[in-house]
Every structure is written in C-alpha cells, then in structure tokens.
Image (tube, rainbow over all chains, first blue to last red; front, side, top):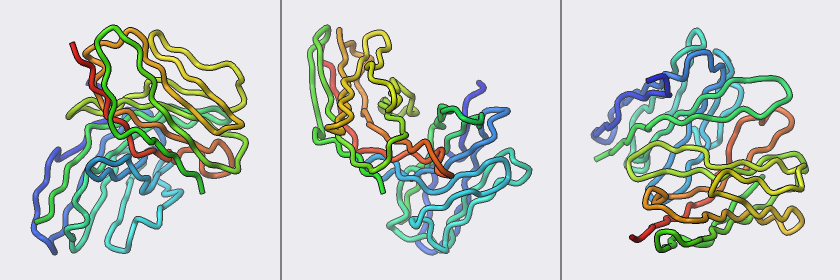
Length: 116
Length: 117
C-alpha cells in the first residue's frame, strides 16, 4: 500500500498526559498537512510542511501542540498536557508541490484520540 | 478568511435515483478551487470532484457533477444513479490558490448521505 499511513489508529489517554502521532506521507510528496476533525464536523487545518519547513500554523495550534517533519519525510504531531477538548480525529494529508498548479491532497486514515 | 457552509446535515436517496448536496462559500478572493470530498464510515477521505474558479464549465466525473455559480458563491454536487457505495459523509471544501496559502483546505460541516436499497 503506497498511501498515506498514520500511527496509531486509536489512542486513549488520561488528561494531562503527552501523546505523539506519526504520519508517513506518500513517497516523493513534499507537502504534508495536519487537520483536526471533531465528531460530526469537517476537518480544520492545523499546520503544513513543505519538505522540512513548517510554512503555516493555525491559531488552533496552541502552545501545547508541536509538529515536526525531520528530513522532510515522516511527520510527528505531539500534544502535551492533553485536555478533554483535544479528543478528535487527527488527519494527515500529503501532496506534491508543483509550481503554478493545484496538487491533490491525499488523506490518511487518521488517528482517533480520546482523552479521559 | 474563507467560510464554507453546508446547510443539509443529512440526506437520503433511493438507489438509482439522483440527489443534490448543497454548499455555499464566502470569499473575497478570485483565484481558488472548490472540492467535494467523500468520507465513508471508518474509511479515509477521498476526492470526488474539483472545480477551478476560473472555469465557467461545470466539472463532471462519471456519475458526479457540480453546479458552480460563482456570483452566488454556490457549489452543489449532483450524484446520479446513486449506489449503495455512495453512502458516506460528503464535505465541500475551498482552497485559495494564491500567495503562500497554497494548500490549506477549508471544509464545510459535512452532509451525511444515506443510499437506501
């Protein structure tokens, strides 16, 4: 399978704990995106990377959230001191950046986080 | 900032019939794309169809077509000959195609479509 993969698929944690999610984009895709989707709602943009550079962050990404993409390959999203309001599906998507054109974003299956 | 609104939380249709999902958006930009994404239960999101704002012709992909009304900022999806596999949450999404925001999708709230046999 050469699609976007995310790990873990499900995570249950207690309030106050730190969690880290991983996303492996499609090979050769230089752009990577993180979105958050709460139950019954559409995904909301969190951040994106072009190669290893983090180009944009949403104001939704509080100081407790940090994302990295070392070497421009996989990406991690860490949430520190989790709160019940962080419970959501965290989606990763990737695309290939070509100048002057639209690039389709391919989504992973998501990581569902439950904070107790 | 752009907003996308889907006013139909749920829709249902009989197999083989046609259904239309509504979407409106608000933007001051002129260079953008619009999309419909499908998210089946417990499965990942996939792109159904896209429309470039500069194109007047409505996009079509097999049984899926759109009605793009730029002045009215309306972007509806028509599914013809509905199939059971079309059962999913459908999201309308906006992407600004200029400046440095060349990747951030703005989604609507979604419409749950159920196709009945």
